[in-house]
Image (cartoon, rainbow, N blue to C red; front, side):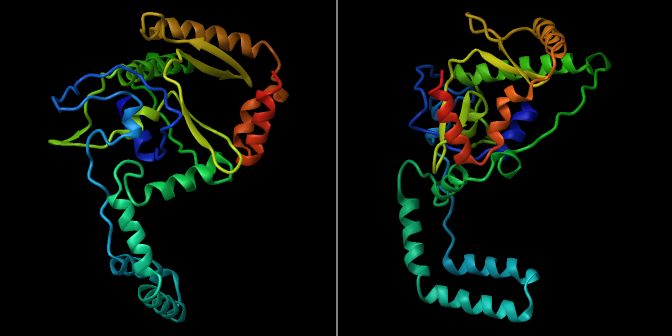
Length: 284
């Protein structure tokens, strides 16, 4: 699960804030670092005081730009690019650089000069999330021959992921360190319990850390499974395996109804999906 989480964190770049639910659970990080954290604070605050992304000089940026486009252009095209770059330095470049410098001096969100632009691109892009935005990863087969079965693997993974997530929510996650340097951990609060809600024009991030269930999709049918008990403990893999087996038996005993497979709507163009979701929300 730790390896999986690292992969997710490398690909995940989203922000939250206003819609996050404030939790009271705080503790000292296990590394002994002198700060506390709440799960929402992992992503809407600079808890580890990570330095801001350095702002390069305009000339350095254009130098890298020209180095990048050179293999992609003809000699004539490259000369035009060089001319445009030189004009940029002598015209609007300094003004834009000053605006970026103001962003780097700002305390709080955005925490770097690119973050707000990235969020606008990520949440404002109207293209379908599937393929265009969503990350993809695959899970390696278990080295244990006795755990190659689909149901067994799913139960083991879901249970392990839930135990890890409980550490995040309860404030028990160890500090992410690179030798003696604390690393940014903002994305851990968005691995689970978070979603990108479709809205016209720009989506919003929403979080809810009270949820105790997972959703199982089998044969185009959806099943809700409570995986965290009232004492805050994750369901054991063996117990979850039995439930998943029952779900599979039930789902395969019924013909697939593609008309009820609402999950496909999430792969729609974002404004179209937003309109449909608004209609669904007001039809129940």
